[in-house]
Length: 380
Image (cartoon, rainbow, N blue to C red; front, side):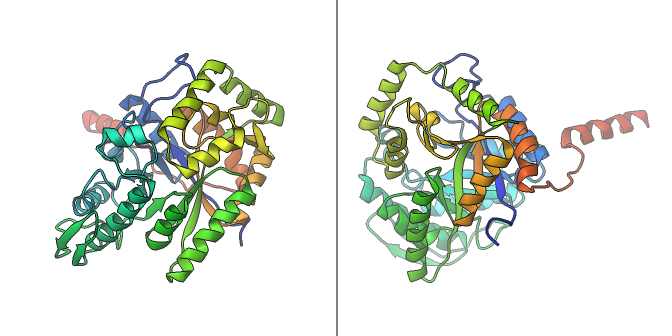
């Protein structure tokens, strides 16, 4: 029953770096491998199902990073970006098959069409919004066929592909790793309805999210498909409401008015994203109206692009707000918090019990087990 079943809880790897404050280098932690390893192993140990690895020119490459973290984690899944327009679909299918095997069947794929014009231009993508989603649709037609071992003869506007559909190293998951996707425009909804397993949304008020989900459900039903739903959101959870709101205020306490104005200018010049437009409209770059729904706070979006809202409160309140999203169809929460290492622990220790999440027993830590075994060998 919605509202009572366990939620799937994911965490976030800050592959562009993070820190205790937004909008400043004070306390900044660069995206070094050792730090990413600490966060991934903490998430694995604490019982998060997986981690999202973001994408972009400023991010540590997710495909490389996930393959390096695979032997250092046990059950953790890796939600890695797959970028239509940047890589050929048949080659991408071979890459996904190989990485899923390396990860032992723990690969998930996040289809990212992209909406930042300047970042897309760095990768040689100069299509407009409608053309990018048309390309994504073609890409996924080819990718899904090749990844599932089906022959395909495809002649579209963006791709001409002749493939026998035979993969030397297919993925362990069948027919291929699950596909995740977020797109708030009408063309994005069409792509979701045609191809993906999970539709993701950023944290808008529940009534706005419900409208998007209804549109995706209806479009998928016309095609004889069903789609599951996930929520990408920040969490600020403390023992009391007052402590949580103090932590939210502290997070943005170093953001200057000049930095907010610069963020406004960047978004107006760079973005063709309906999802980003909706995020920005929640706060309008105003500091005085950041609680846009009960416990839903848009302060992160004053400076951060992408997911810009957080649920703020004590464990029981945040759990209740997440249950409200679950009641409209969300079964997966992809959460984050600053800084990500410490907040992974806070969320697990405070929120998991309130949600009735009980992580499965885990084997001895890999590094610790190997160290213990090496001592036994030396002793013998």
